[in-house]
Image (cartoon, rainbow, N blue to C red; front, side):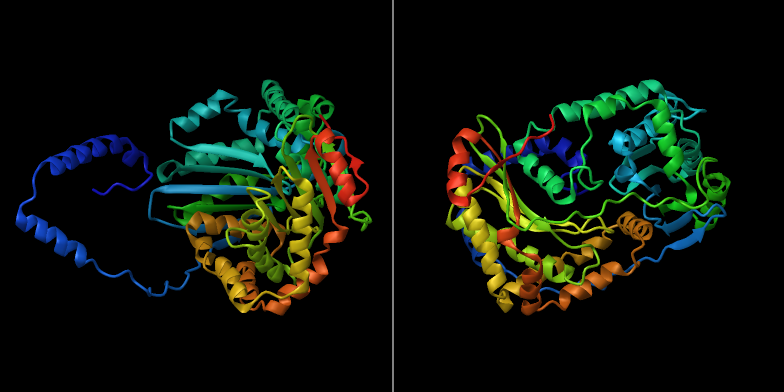
Length: 500
């Protein structure tokens, strides 16, 4: 039986394979070759087939259409059957997430999602839930993103009914144990203590605060005092406020019968109701208006005493997910980045100013404008920034050649098929689009949009959304070493203090 590369079985067998191969190699080296064998070896090497120059077209992408039902409580359910292996995976997404954390307790969403899973349920508190899952080689996991709380499970087909029952308990009857609250608070506090250890993450984080506003739901960071004040009652209140069936989507993919699955879900999650304290309709996710932007091109320096490298982030307001320029800007991002990209070629390959450099438009969150961010790490921040601004200005001045455009578009279009690599991958996309209110054919709209991008589209989009001289610059570096040369080149350098 052939062993799959990278599999645990292959790795376990590899040392023995190597030993056998080494012995065989040594034997071959010491044994003299006969004249016939020498001739055969020569003929074999001279008759190697040529490398192929053309390949057959890939088959058409097959998109599985899920069965969609809405339970009586308003929960939207998507089911995708896949009987290749006897496994089932499911995901529940509930609107809320980190943006829903109250201003005085930023980080509450993360703690709440963790405690909801780790604390077990009223029927299976704490480790009892873990043991029940381990007996079935199943798992239930959860967490919070910016816009949602997610819970999911994975199990064997034969255990589906039992695991759905345990999952339903986690959603409707979480134990929310005090010791688990303390555990997750300690974990978040540890992250806060070390969030500035890696200087490379500081400029991007502080850039978001400067563009969006320090207290914006899109940029804020939790403080130790806020996390320390979180209680089990806060966790319960947060979950009551944001977890409700009519503000959620549930998807299941794998080896099951859809008709039986709907019956099972009606008997479990179908009985889920909004908490009595909740309003009749799901609340809107909190947002923060974009503040007026300063177009003067300010430069901020975060002192990192003793650091020999400077970490840099440069940025400005970007676009939202549905902006018509998103296709052209994504193509421009491919033109700028990676081996052969404009930023890489100019700043690394030609000038040797950085090992890595990148730039592009971040279009998330879906209901708010993202950012354009570029940056890297360098021992010569003045030269790096000058080169970066020059490349960005050149991109505004001249449309890319047709060859450059085609290469960049191919990077996206050739990877399109991987969006359908598995049933579960397709299910996750369906759930996210449904939760965010995007059309289910958005991915195909995106593909068509990329195909239609022209060189002039790229240049015009760059003119509208790329303004190097107006961008905010954040540098994390040793002040004694770098402040004077930065001032000499860019004028005013503003000191920026950060939260410890």
